[in-house]
Image (cartoon, rainbow, N blue to C red; front, side):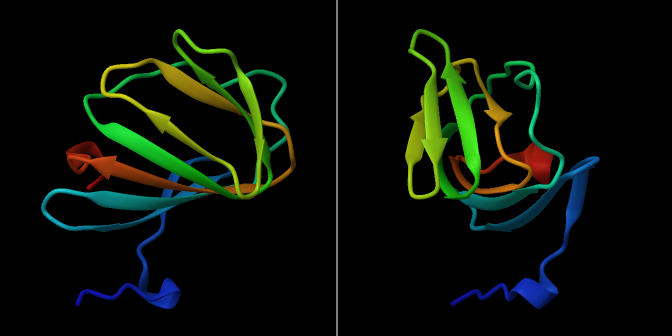
Length: 111
């Protein structure tokens, strides 16, 4: 059983104020995303990918935007999913937040 302890996780600085930690198998990936650069005046630019995504909001508050859907204000304990190919983004409402993103298939671009 693969284990990844917090002290051994490789931290990737995605951009200032955004860090990512990963664990994955051959077909699925989980990413812990820590934000320390909020709140944001505007959402990040929308993006899409071939991966299916499920996200759990561990801490903080965000607005979730997904193509074809009404924007949603989400807080700790809330979740969202994104189908393959659908444009989506978030806007951070609090100074910090932590999200857990799960992807299938795994995101080679994160490795």
